[in-house]
Image 1 (cartoon, helix red, strand yellow):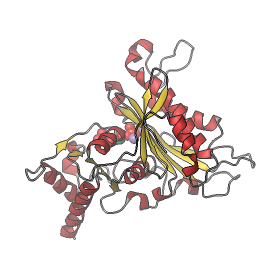
Image 2: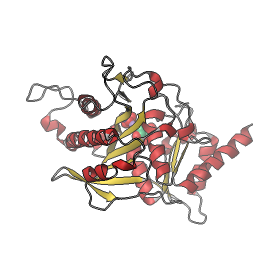
Image 3: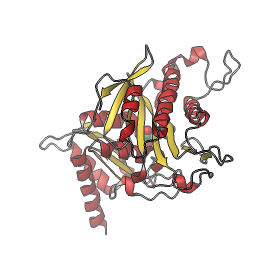
Image 4: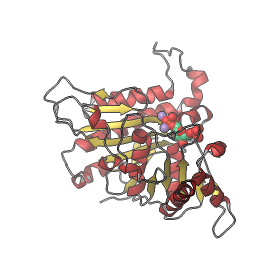
Length: 339
Ligand code: AHG
Ligand code: MN
Ligand code: MN
């Protein structure tokens, strides 16, 4: 049951029974992400005051070192999840290795692990443009009560239990799925409460927006070059409109509402692609599929890729179903021509 204007807290409690293994643990986990999101939101909102309040590397009035926002966000999410004793492991884009929690305590019964991109679109911070946070939640595969291992983190995206993002935009929103559709909650900053503002979000099957960093055009594979030319062609409902913010979260969020496709292909500069499978592509793919959209590496479903390392990168094509189908068709055709 969901009603517009319901708070996120109420929504989590009322929907708890819908979870497969309903022990309340996942609800507590999403609750702590909500809490960390509010803290990070507060800091992100002050970013423009950095010259007044102190830049990264300075010491603030309490004698604490000022930190870059991506480092700050990383610390806040890890701290919140660790201190509340809610997860058994965390992996973050900002950390070289995964973090095992309570690994010395045989009695700890936590089942979930979290993978996180604490601040997505970090190059936009200094210019007052929307940034985000992306999170992905799995059940551990090793026995409860033991220390987590790399195996717990290298699971296919299809094993995700929940995934979501926070967009720090003109309003701050949390959008997430637990495998029962996608819901979006908007923060009322005056009272610090998220309200259900976008129930059952869905990608339109078709769209008119394409989002890609065209500055890299000459380095793209032929299939992507041809698809971009197709988007620009005068025919039917084309040419499409080009929109590229440079924060995956914000580009994805707009495309989900309006209909569109986001593309970060591999190129002769980034041979594997740029985006990270575990922190960015899998969670966004889970949300996309739950919202009737699609996510692919050009040939295969993102969530079927078997991860081999924590910081693995993959090409990413994601958005309205018919648009992603079309881009894949161009990729297949170019491969046939080259072989
Ligand atoms: P992050 O800030 O977490 O490193 O991610 C940035 C990502 C993604 O959000 C964005 O769409 C893309 O990198 C932008 O890359 P380009 O500047 O190469 O277009
Ligand atoms: Mn990112
Ligand atoms: Mn990041």
